Amino acid sequence: MSTAKVESVKISLGNFLRSDNLTANPIAKPLIALIENISQSCQMISKAVNQGALDNILGSAGSGNIQGETQQKLDILANDMLIQANESSGLLAAMASEELDTIHVIPEHLQQGDYLLLFDPLDGSSNIDVNVSIGTIFSILKKPQQDIPITESDFLQAGYQQVAAGYALYGPQTILVLTTGNGVQMFTLDRHQATFFLTRSAVKIPVDTKEFAINMSNMRHWAKPIQQYVSECLAGTTGPLQKDFNMRWVASMVADVHRILTRGGIFMYPWDQREPNKPGKLRLMYEANPMSFLIEQAGGASINGQEHILQIQPKQLHERVSVILGSKNEVDRVLAYHQSF
Image 1 (cartoon, rainbow, N blue to C red):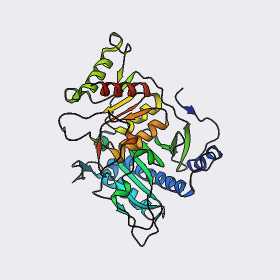
Image 2 (image 1 turned 180 degrees about the vertical axis):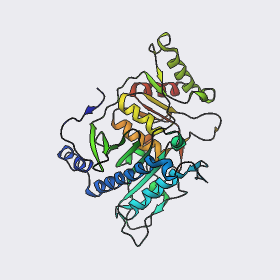
Image 3 (image 1 turned 30 degrees about the vertical axis):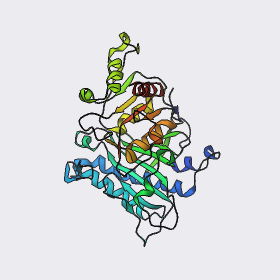
Image 4 (image 1 turned 45 degrees about the vertical axis):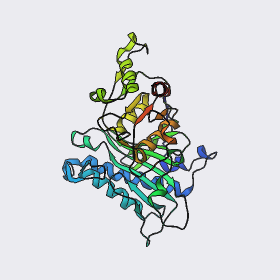
């Protein structure tokens, strides 16, 4: 089994964070409060996603974000919900979002805290109109300095410096997946009680896998190490890997990563030659870092091809990166292929 199922007394998110299970690595009370606040924001977003066309919030918003991507109505709504719900919490110094040009500093008239929050308010938003699982990804950092104005440079911390990270998956159930550096836990939303309850504890990813996730239509554009690895997966038992693989691709990172955390696999969104000057498409700060933190806490691995993602020193807020993550033995194999070319 890759995860331990929780079958006895229901444990709420708040009670888990305060429980005796974490006495060896206690979580600061302000961080607990911030995680609970984020979880409440995700509940609001979940309700909005469920309403969809009934509230006329599907489709394009007619605007674009700083990455040049078309924003959906729900992108903007989810972004606003996260900002409004967390701005006055007194726990944050500033926030950064994939949908904003620059950071959102907590106004001077509001109490400021010691944490920085980064988020992709609605990952996989291109799937909104076809009712495929989407989600919210978040990352929490400590404010590095005291008593000076917050700037973008304060957010440019390597992924290993995250104090917490997670995502909410809006699918058949709404699930919150979380790490505070003490393993990975999954919580499921009980809509009747408006509470997340622990449903999987100490999640572990199998080190070996027979599933890979990648957009095969781009194969001709990939670098040789990725082409070689995928070709060997497709060769199955007749190839050097000597096992048959299945391919899965949802085109929603939260859905693809959730499947890997649940049963193993490898997810790849590599560099390709169509935009050779860009190291990748996914955002380091909003997607790659928090997902890599989760994956590595569950016993997996995460690389950009040449190095571990959590070791990358960010140079800009909206930096992009190639991402290969999942079951450790397969990720290590892809790393070796990159090093051999």
